[in-house]
Image 1 (cartoon, rainbow, N blue to C red):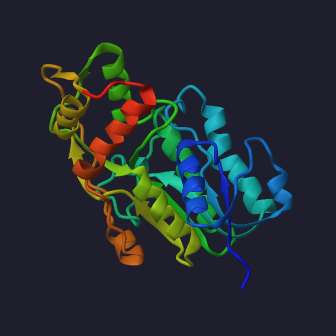
Image 2: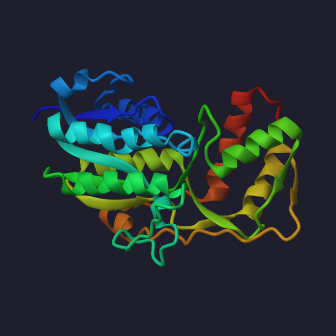
Length: 277
C-alpha cells in the first residue's frame, strides 16, 4: 500500500507550521510548498490541507483576503491532483447565528466591513463542498492558543499589552466568553480529519466558553500583570461551539483551559526572554 502524502498549503502560517511539525513527528510523508510557489499544481498532492488565509489584517487587505480564501482554492480545484481536501475556515462564521452546529443557517451582511472575512470564508467553504470533487472537508477553527509570530487573537493582544506596560485593561466585562482551543489539540484533530474518509463540515473547538475572568486570573498569577476592567464594560460572548458531530466522528476531547494555559504562558515567557514571575 503506497505511503500517504499530505500537502499543507499555507505551511508558513501559524496553524500550517504547527501542522507540518505534527505530521513530521508522526512520520507522515508531508510536503509544504513555499508561498507563491505554484509548482505544486503539476505534482500529486495526496491529502491537501488548505491553510492559506489572512486573519487580523483582513480589513486593510480585502483583495488579498479574497485571493487567499477563494481564488487560490479555485485554482487548486480546477488544476490540482489531490485525493482529498481539508479547507480551514473559522467559527467566526457563526457570529449572529442562533446555533453553532455545522448545519446552522448563517448570517452575513455585505454592508458590514468586518463581514468580508466571513463572506470570503463561506465562499471558500461552498466552493470546496460543491466544486465537484469527492472527499471534501471543511474545518471551522475556534480561537487557537499557541505561540505565533504576530499577535492575532484576543489573548495574544493582551500579552503584548502586558509585556509592554506591565498590565492589561479590558474593555469587555469579566463574564465575557470565547471558545479557545490549544494548538496541540487543533493540529491533532486536523490530522485526523485530513486522513479520514469523512466529508462535510466539522467544528474544531473546545466546545466550552472561557471567561475574561479566567484569562485575567492566569495572567496575574503566571505573568505578574496588573489587570483592570473599564467601567460599564459590555458583555461580549460567542455562543458555545457545538462539538457533537466532531466528537462523535473522531472521538475528540479537548484539553481544559486551566490545564494547558499555564504551560502556554511559560513557553511565551521563554520565547520573549522574560524571567519567571
